Image (cartoon, rainbow, N blue to C red; front, side):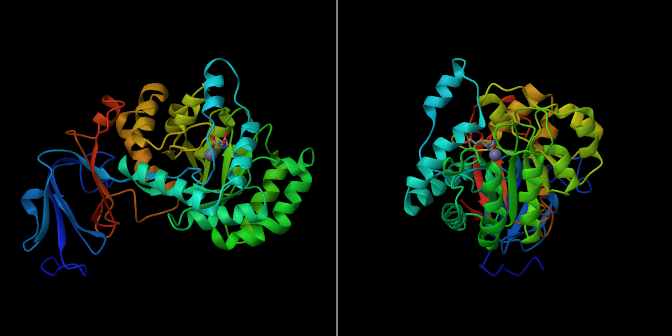
Length: 398
Ligand SMILES: N=CN[C@@H](CCC(=O)O)C(=O)O
Ligand SMILES: [Zn+2]
């Protein structure tokens, strides 16, 4: 197997890796499956071999990258982003930093700017942010619609996103748009009857913002059930700004993930731990809204699956940097560096129900990043430093 070139004509050997995170406990030490002095062989877009470099298979010729003792890990899997939008909200951020509270209503500012933007402008914005996130090590990114909130604008948001990612989410009910002011039930009826059937073929996931000032539990359930009926899998924005029904609704509907999870009761934590629903924590949003942070320790200690995502959006969190989120998770949420790295790679893959990414095993997508550091611990240890030095996606150096 190893002496034949990949169909693209060659293997790529990443050699002399100081510490490799595989996320395969059977391949190395601890939950991260750490291998020291490791090598990875990639071909045809997949991992073909992984192990100690002293055992690289004969004939693994092709391009060879010598990492000279630097660390490598799976590319980050960012399972929560809002990249299709017009405009920005720096003034709102500045006001918040001097005391103004965050509320769901700010979303309407971006709805107006998104509706006014051309397809080309929206596409350029997505391309810019996808490139930015790739540069900081994100090799898979989800993105949501949600700043259109009309059938044509949600539809074109998903179409614009389709050039960049297969992980597309119809965020059909983000906030009631101005033409439905005071009539949120009418908006939800339109979403269920018209928007979901028309938009579902362009998405994989259905999402709702279940929160005070956005949509209540019954409205959220109606939106999610319409999405399920149209073949989409649910994910939920829940418990971001207050205690509420989001977590329990996500668990009840067997959602892939419930995201934010900042205000949780003991019952919420227990429900998540007993479920297959991933708790996706978005500490960048809590940072940029001066919110409290989720109780990651309670979730982890109870046995819930925890993911970390960046939540790039113009309102609550205008960053694409997963390393920044890892640093926050460790410093502010008391996750260990190992837990945070797992959550940003394997955890993100779990939140997207993907088994082909988030780990370095034979047969996985060849998505791998190299750090300008000897181990993954430096991602939290050196906050704010651009440590991601090389990125391979589908086996190609980007
Ligand atoms: N909370 C809901 N949606 C976004 C924020 C949207 C906005 O303020 O524009 C989030 O995930 O934080
Ligand atoms: Zn979000």
